[in-house]
Length: 266
Image (cartoon, rainbow, N blue to C red; front, side, top):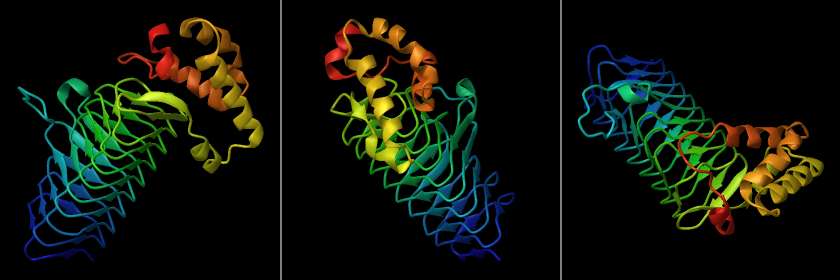
């Protein structure tokens, strides 16, 4: 049985899942679907064509499904949030836009700290952590198990691969390879997210192989394009190496985030 506070306003057409509680002063729009066993604590605004999965907890003043923050916007799309997410105070997630495919997606088990923002047409993976005020511009792609530090901002159309760690107070302007560790005011690649890789059960042998590949690609002799061509045969030696090379090859909108000393050689 759903529990609805008498001060909440739920418009006709909204679907509230079994066991979900909607706290004081929440506002739920007519095209919203909320899954089972969610908890909207208080003062939550869910609007637009928004679907929220089961088992999510949403804290006061979160705003989910509002239109994209685009000038001259004439139509809005959808927002889809997965299961088991925790969305803290004042988090904002915008719906998709007509020019971006019309859909913003957030995966399962994400933890979004206060004031984090997911812009229009972003696609965010599973098991991510966005620290306080972590911000995505529109059309970003964020892989699984990504951590974005507090007060960091990701430029629109940027891709961040799986298992990346972004430090605090970073401006991320380039695509970040899977398993990368980036830091600095204008984010630079500082190495691999070894702690995260160990948590994902990488063996010592695999860690050594990926580290060796990383050194050859980012710190070997010559310019980056030459080094990239030289390491292509290593793609089959480890799945992580293949994933990094595929990610680099699929780049379209943004330059690659490189170590600080290699930017002028790209």
